[in-house]
Amino acid sequence: MKGKQLHYKTLQMTNDVCTCKYVYEGNVKNPLTKISVCPAVSEFHQSFYDKCNAEPEHHCHQIVGNRYDKTTNQAIPWHSDKSALLSSNTDIVSVSLGCGGVFCYMPNEKEKLSEFHRSLELGNKWKKRRQAAIDGGLRGCVPLFAGDVLLMCGTFQECMQHKTLPFRPSGGACSEALRVPSIVGDVMAKYPGTSAEGLTWLHKAVEQGLTAGGEDRGVLTFRRIAHHYDGVR
Image 1: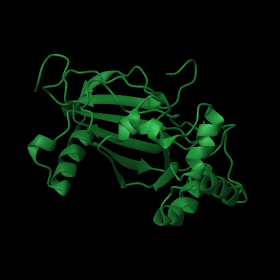
Image 2: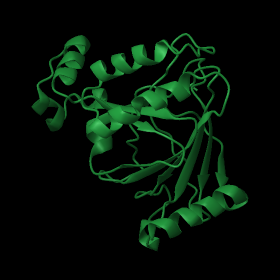
Image 3: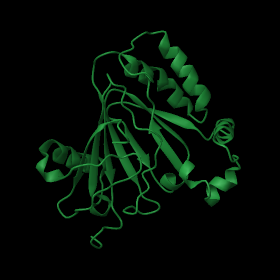
Image 4: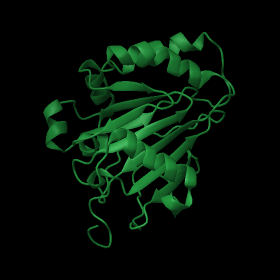
């Protein structure tokens, strides 16, 4: 919850040996439960490791499940997953569910004094920095669909911020086909760092997001905690 606006519904789960509650910028005050008491999540958790051939030292301690309601245009605003619980070069994996969505990224506004940010020479005022990031191709997006896996690694959380693109700023259903090319064009102009493959799928993701009815968008995010509150695991 941010102010009085509910950005999404969420459930935070940890494995049986971890009790750390993960609170970060853009997140809500989550209830905390165990992965083992959610059979569907527990099964998915294990099958995901099996498909990735993940060794035990790469298993996560925590899964956060978010659900974004289409009818109320829920989306998470700009934020970073940076946390005292995570290492500075942590790997964060997310799996998309349901309706397609668009993951956007740009230089992290909370780290303007960092060496990385200063090296970009974006300027002091937000509008100037934003335009400089656009001109430099530092803003981009990734269309994501059910089953897609996104990996954020290295210093991404330190250097960049990200958000989910809202398709209907005013909320409510809006299925007019004419809006799709307009939104796609606007996204291409504001996020020129998008890859050629991303641009190929962008129209479909926007179309799914605008279509009235159908599935909500969901995301399962896997994190490995490096600095536990009560010691090293």
